[in-house]
Amino acid sequence: MKTLFFIFLFPFALQSGTVQHPQTGTSTRGDILKQIKNKKVSLFFNRIWNDAVFVSNEYKIPIALVLAQSAQETGFGTSKNCVHNNNFFGVRRCGKYEMYSCKFESFVDYGAKVLGQDCYKGCVTLQDWFTKLECCGYAGDAKYTKRLKKIIETYNLYLL
Image (cartoon, rainbow, N blue to C red; front, side):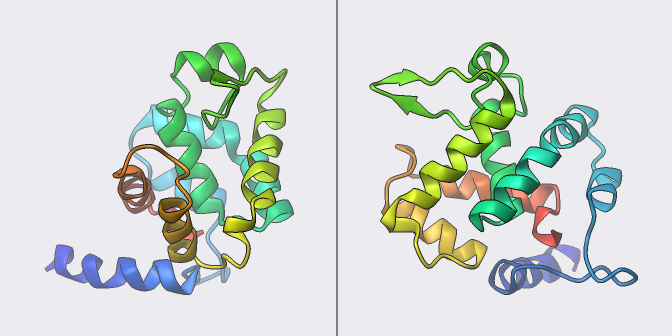
């Protein structure tokens, strides 16, 4: 029964944007991080939270998508590219992974790069973004958005 309920709830959450927290009206960092049982995942989201929020607000990209893409691209902060290059989104230039002086620089470049492309103009909901990521060829892997959705679903990021 829980699975059936979630199948119906999750697509609605993607379309409506956010689900309201019963007491405060919004979900918070603490709400999300408390319910994550995997310590590595929780620490990763906590580590990137402020940069993700900044990029989300500045470039109007859903916070759930920013968090999920960074998690996907870095293996929750464990990839060599992330650790050595501060590259939290797998950004490449001229076929080589971009090197950043700090993670904030990586987040801002990602925001500017995504928002700066005409393909992503007009995206509002998570579903809009998933559709555009697929049709604009953001990733070479056809299952990329499916994996992003799984991260968002697993860690309840759609509540943000």
